[in-house]
Length: 82
Image 1: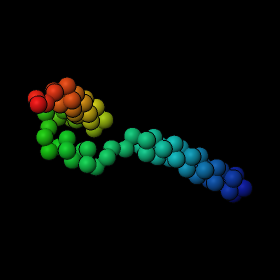
Image 2: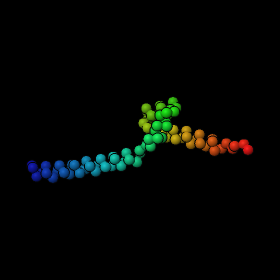
Image 3: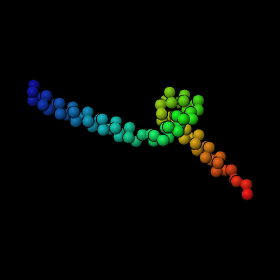
Image 4: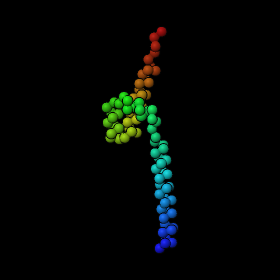
């Protein structure tokens, strides 16, 4: 019985470590920049707040980035008068 435990416990620990490494790599890929999150929380829109509570930060940041792209696009399309 002791022999089985001495083989089984290290294997379980190894598989647990491998699983946690996969979880960590997924979390590392989906990290959010702090300045972007701060800016979104300073000037929230109702749809972004709703998405934050229903779907989490990833969906709310998608809406925020889309809003920023639209706002930048309108600034670029405006031609300054000479």
